[in-house]
Length: 115
Length: 112
Image 1: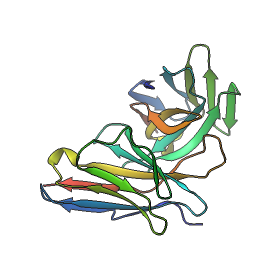
Image 2 (image 1 turned 30 degrees about the vertical axis):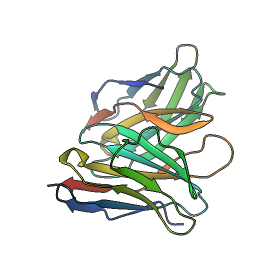
Image 3 (image 1 turned 120 degrees about the vertical axis):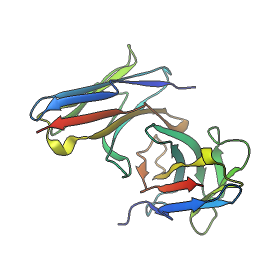
């Protein structure tokens, strides 16, 4: 049973370019979460999605960031016009839907470096 | 919103000793408290979690205690081993809002 998959594992972009991060949840999981971790810091919630729906985007910057979880395919976190401050590790997590607060399992992360 | 504070930020113990990490939370509605271990460059891995309907949970050398009145919970690691060295994060969430709010992390160093 494969765990949460993320790609790419490392991504280098120049300022002003776009970054696309992908996340495939664990089999049987319908909830996806994105978190950002700055160097030497904790994880900060960004967005929570179910298939075709954004449920909670309270942690997402209002500009340049967007997320989707289409009916088919992985969840995508998209960062437009990247700046140096976007350099961080971006972790995706997934959970089941049992009606209570479910355990979140994390992927290996995408380490974004903005030059 | 929820705020989780974690102490200490660093902790060094001798192999075989116990380690205790403490977290406090602000939202009295929080009812789920997981602990994650993160090794350098790796993903956060769940090591134990507790829900607000119990006060203590144990899994081999790891235990978590929860005091809902005081709004704090603690991770206890007994008989520490060098492979326990990592950064440990506590987190909290509640029914109706699945987002985890994390503490700032504790870097645990177990000296052989």
